[in-house]
Amino acid sequence: MSNRRTFLKQSGLAGAGILGSPLFTAVGANGSSLPGERLAEIRRQAASRHRQSSNMCGYAAPPIGTVRIGFIGVGNRGSAAVQRMGYLQGVAIQAICDVRPEKAAAAKGRIKSPGHGATLYTDGPESWKAVCDRDDIDLIYIATPWKLHAPIARYAMEHGKHVAVEIPAATTVADCWSLVETSEKTKKHCVMLENCCYGFFELLTLNMARQGFFGELIHGEGAYIHDILDSLVEPEKRFGYWRLEENTHRNGNLYPTHGLGPICQAMGINRGDRLAYMTSMASDDFMLAELVEKSAGTNPSLREHIGPMVRGNMNTSTIRTAKGRTIMLQHDVSSPRPYSRIHLLSGTAGTARQYPLPGRIATGHEDWLNDDEFATLEERYTPPIVKRIGELAKKVGGHGGKDFLMDWRLIDCLRNGLPMDMDVYDAAAWSVIGPLSEWSAANRSASIDIPDFTNGAWENNAPIDLTLEKGGNTDVVLSS
Image (cartoon, rainbow, N blue to C red):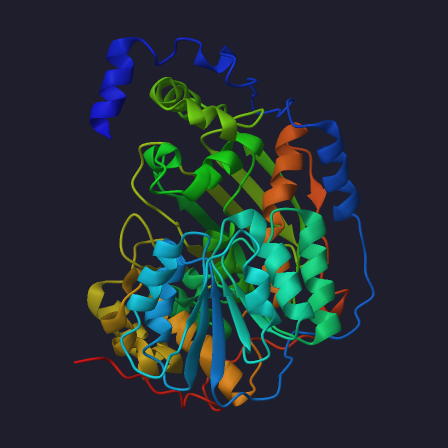
């Protein structure tokens, strides 16, 4: 990567006015190139209201002894999920769907345990409908490009399936509303697969917050800072250049949920508090346009996937909650920076922080607690889910084990008829930050209201259960 950037500088491409090339319409922090009708639609949908037909927060669907799963989209994340699910007892992998037959076959080959007669669906871009139409599937697991998340999730719920959908669950405000309304109407779970909510430090600090260790939470910070710039123009990394399209059609905080999800859970968002309004500011783009211009010189097909703008390198969004707390979110996937999700919780009695250092806790303004003091807190506040499955999760893997923790918890809740840690209101509230940030960044960082997807039920919804007093009986069988 450093060689590529050196070449750009030496060749004079950097700073050579690439943004003014025919490939792009230049756009700055005011987002002036975003089509006006799309901006207006974001604002209209953000002001929408709906009458709640049923409350899916705390909803317990009938238990499913063996959860029969259909996977749709088995590139990097979906294929890994197939393998992880294969380790769980009480699971039957019934179907694997992808537009690339070789990917579907490879995903099936990753199943390490017997008893999974997965049928492959690879006939075309709408093969996923046949998976959702089957009567012998309980859960649809979606890991496709973003724009397909909401349409597939809606169709699956309408055809009697629970849904687990990768992040973000939707990329428009209208789709966020449609997921809420469909889940309520069908009484089917719509769980967003936000694995960072199952990080070991995030779960530790969630339990600490729930037990009052930090006092009253005042402020949180989260981010997705991850240099994936080169992969945006590499066809083998992003099928059909779908993520490049997202980054040249939209200028905002496009991937907010990694940072936001754990903060929302600690603050009780949708369960005693809610996200009220937000603002967003985007830098100009200093890197992506020049990379695409250079890459299109040797790969002209890239031009078919370019939108009317380039997302600014850094987006910073700020949110205020109904109870007066604040949240700062950042998004940058194109600058040469070390990976960070930040994860900061600041309260009246203590602070937690992760990145750039490992997780740390402080109880005053002097310094972070030392390793022995931290270990004492960790022993006291590690939640039961980590004690029950944490070491096994590390062995299975998936971002250090949090992917498997997430999958195990999803299946355990379905098998025991328990409410979900992350329901459709969380999926909508965390995902909607993406399109709302586009509107704000395009309007000189003006504030915009965040819809109350719970229709007021947030005031009485109960916090998520960390006790494992019910369930916890889903076994794991690892191959020798």
